[in-house]
Image 1 (cartoon, rainbow, N blue to C red):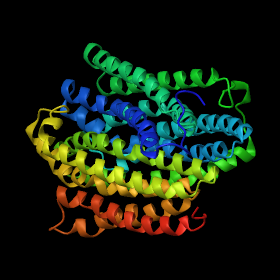
Image 2 (image 1 turned 180 degrees about the vertical axis):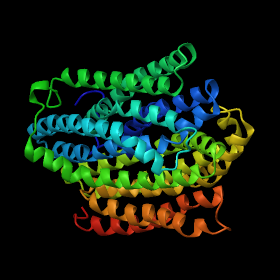
Image 3 (image 1 turned 90 degrees about the vertical axis):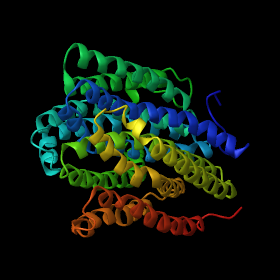
Image 4 (image 1 turned 60 degrees about the horizontal axis):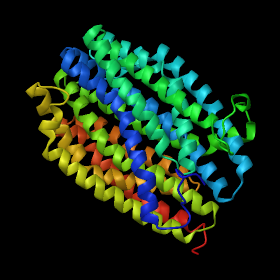
Length: 448
């Protein structure tokens, strides 16, 4: 075991969880800063239309990136199980199969983004005044889907053995480059939204290259050999079987966000910009609590592989508690200091006022989302990815779409507050159902 690896089966649990999760939070923070930097730079150095152009497509771009990230659950769970069972030869086959999936998946998504984005942006109700800028930003971002896929699958390989530090180091390097290039392209070369999109893609190429180089230098079963990246039918099938439901769950979840973005767009450019700025602030809460989802999945899978079944109950209780507490604390801080935080993205008082409407309703209730995420991760760690997909599809996503199609259309609920009330409502319903499912699935394993 390397110094950067974490023993998930033995030793103090809380210390291991924190050691795993803190670098993961930092890594996700840097990844989110790619988009946050885009919004901040165009908000201060571009026009209001530039900010609205980026803000109106955030949910769409993030939807695709989250789909890729969620797909890596299959890699994480399978490798964690095999590590717990000490089946190291299988780990190498899964690692190389994962990289093949990353290359194929990234290529497919790039083609999709280049040719389908205009139709999707129009379907989302993107205002005509910002559509050309939004389309330019989106198409350039989709050119970076291959490096995004490579980084996420490569990081998942390292997460599965408890190494969350190196992905963080790679993203810090890429994040610094992203900020520098954003400022150069927008301020010096006046490239506006195209400049921030290009900066993001180039930074993603750097993070992907660094993680590939690091994996190639490994001297164990995690060593990546480019010649061995091929279509291993059984391993790819296993990864897809575990990862596809998680990817679909993320996709459906984000489709509901795209539907909500379409409703936001109907309120006009000021509310679009305010929602975009608020959305970026909320991301910082989300990454803090969502990072624990990878932790609970990885720790649970390791202990099931090692037949340490009693420990998975403690893992679930500990991480659900961590997510709820952190979500409540950070949500309260964001609501309290929201007007000052929004000034990072814009100085327009109308945009700040619109952003605060969303922050109060969404950020203030994010602790409920934390409970939902942790319980989904626990189910995935127990080898069940279909159940959380179905629950979130029906209880969370379906409920949001139903809300917009029904009550939101009535005069008393047709407001910015009324629109975003669908978030805490859907989180609460999904959390209750997921908890019941966790208790039932846990019965499949011995108590001791």
